[in-house]
Length: 157
Length: 182
Image 1 (spheres, rainbow over the protein chains, first blue to last red):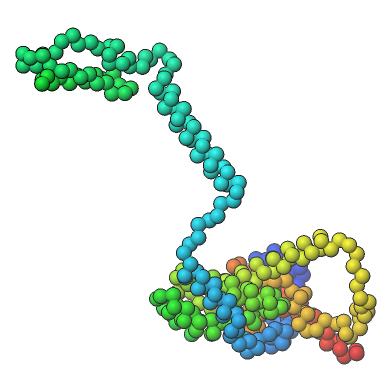
Image 2 (cartoon, each protein chain N blue to C red):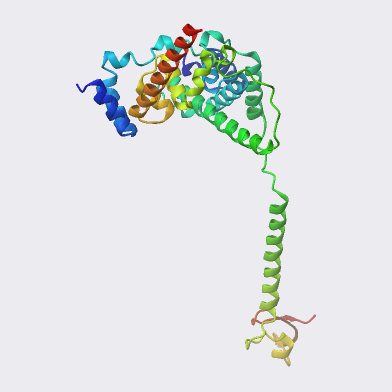
């Protein structure tokens, strides 16, 4: 075993906890002389308050029980947004709506070379429709924004 | 008395079982909190936060570990939070109180009235040393158990305990010499 003076010197030399822990384990914990330089458990105990000095506190329990009751009974509250967050939320929603409206307007009136489907009457003409050898009524439909044209013919009454 | 007393059930049953746990652990918890924090008000706050946290996280407790050590580790964290809060508020107070304050005339530091009482010796230890010493002296914790509470290695816990014991021994001897001279 190393001498007490050497152990003390080495302890002071390197203030690194693993090293100091090692020295304590191999020397200070085993050396009766060094143990005398340390306060014993009984000595230290005189400085501390003891468990026996306290009883379960009613007021303390009431505080804890109140918090626990709140947790058990209360429905989770929605987080309240700060005013700044609300403004940003509305601004973001406005930007999205404006973007969507703008997109639809642009889609219906594309300025580039792609022509918007002309109306059915401009592109399609029926001179005469007969159904079963008899003159018939004809209806022409064109769904909005589509090139498709639907012709409906029915016997005239 | 252990965590098995707490049987999962409805809120009412849970709270009744938790009350039993509280009755068993609160005196020891208060003693440790007062020993670390040095005053009852802060200790009560720390204990309240600890019991609430234990109630919330009891289902996360690993039954292979010691319940007392787990509980003490939570209590130590809450005490440490209290110390941090206190340090912050003290720093704030120092900033606010920039005007010179006339203090009442104090007796010379060497007078017996101004000598720190034995409990004041604990102020010379930092929170980790004080906790290690308290757990060792009051509850018979080993270095391994102290390391679980302080969340450090057993070697480091041994160093805290060693330093605390050494400082206290020196201070007690100094106090004893002083009282004999008086």
